[in-house]
Image 1 (tube, rainbow, N blue to C red):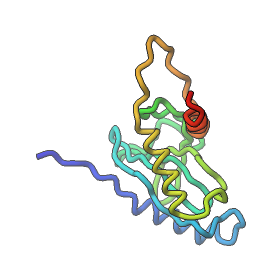
Image 2: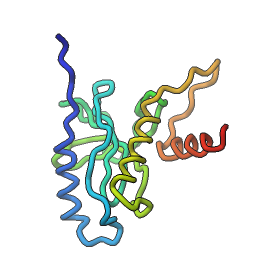
Image 3: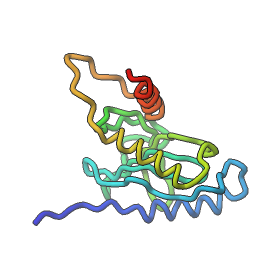
Image 4: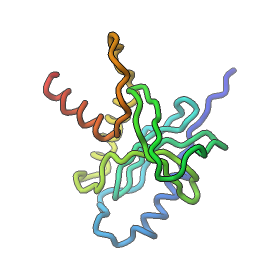
Length: 163
């Protein structure tokens, strides 16, 4: 019998709900149609990965294994993280109640979303893309790490044109 690791995100959601009603309260950037929700979080390579939706941003997030905390870099640093879709540069953040984590903004502000369901559907599509391995390339050089938003938008737009 194998023990499956579980990716618990209740603490993450709780911290960002507190931020929403505290530091973010009353700011015009908030989209009242949205609320804090973790989407697609699961354990991958011993890290908890997924997308966090709030009323002011949507971010891809990487939470380290317990006790790790990404202590090799300073908050605000850019760190390359390997995903099935390729390497991505992410920002090291730190928040009381969570500790250190990697994140990359996908959308901010969130005024493009009319409903929570619409935001969740977009997050699920992005997670599927990030967790899908790239097709093997023949002797192509390794791509440079790039911001997730740019890579996703380039892939989403080129996929729509049949390229």
